[in-house]
View 1 (cartoon, rainbow, N blue to C red):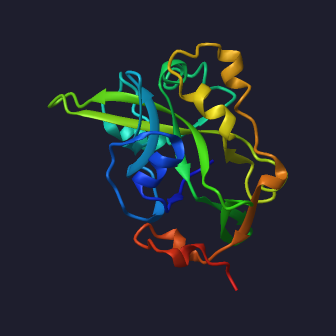
View 2 (view 1 turned 90 degrees about the horizontal axis):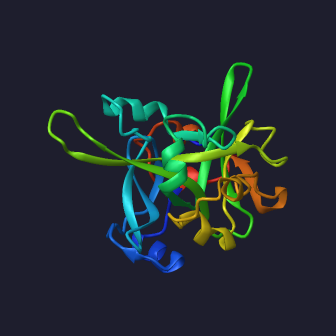
Length: 223
């Protein structure tokens, strides 16, 4: 799964990278982004590609409460096209989640060791995501939320966790973002593990365990 990530680029830098308009206007460097928080995403809607902020944890349009989203932070690639909470978003509402790194915890007897995962070339990753629009029943306030699509872990990460985010290569960005791309088979063919040599993982401090900690020291290799 993917439950924490970093976004070290400003929204304007993300916009430059993805050829998008910056609607987020966020210059912050975020090192411990967690579910239910706003996250910068790249989306194509109404013939516009933009960087904006969506809430992490997908809230389906039919949900009675926003609390549903806390349980839907990830969507499995194997079932994203069929699961009621995700299937409409997969068909029409896809996005990219830029991340410089993400965190995963290796579970061992008596302890959980956190790891940071990054691209070996140190470029930002682009996770496959899906998004949904929901309105609060009590006041009709609109909330736009997303989930990260995950797949089976590649060999590099399999010793840490059985799942990993789908990291889309550059040449897949346009197709994934295109709301008119409706070939479900072609879309699902993109939802595969990243090549083994494209990512690296290393142990880090347990400081990352608390979302109150948010600084570059979280990415330092544990001694």
